[in-house]
Image (cartoon, rainbow, N blue to C red; front, side):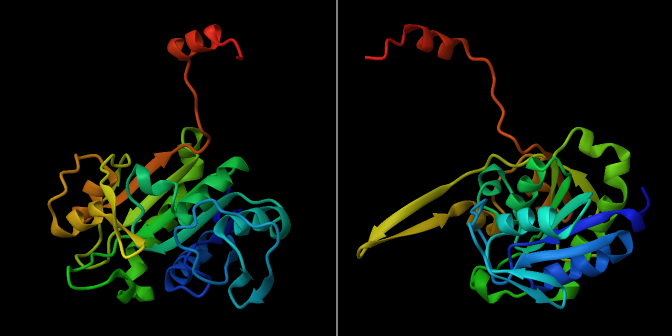
Length: 264
């Protein structure tokens, strides 16, 4: 399949006006026929939430949906593209690293939804280092800051399908650094297992704390080599090949429980 023949659905969770989506759209233009169906507003961290109805308007980039990334994938693949080949989600403002983040991310969830349509997908996110005295909401990368992410994604779009990558993976979770130190290397990784969440209760509300990100900013998170977080902290593009459907294994202990169940 040539690049010109490839039909690509591009979506995200930051919204159709985000610079990360625009950077990817421009980078993918030479690699296929790109159709943008993206949320009209920021839908970060909505996971695989979906709507039953959602308003849609035409946009200079494509179609803006008053809904979630999952809504956009379902609509894009069934209503706006006749014969899709690939779904790309991103580029997200902020990395999507580690096992525990995958189910929360709207960006990754868009790729997961594509997998249930039996289509290959790539979810791309930008690692944005946050100093201790700065709030994440105050950091707004510009389009040029997504250059490394866009370049890596375009490369994978060009080569991954024909190379057989998706014979073994349903989707690729890509995390790229800011383009501060020149071109980055690409590293094949696995999601980190690091997890440290807790909550405090005060004055009638709870406040959730993600200490993984706090420790990552401090540089003292001991992630093993080969993990996505280790790669990105060391300035490399992380590519994790992942599968979407939930899998089961045979468990003799569970068989024994079923055999002794009496229903009363």
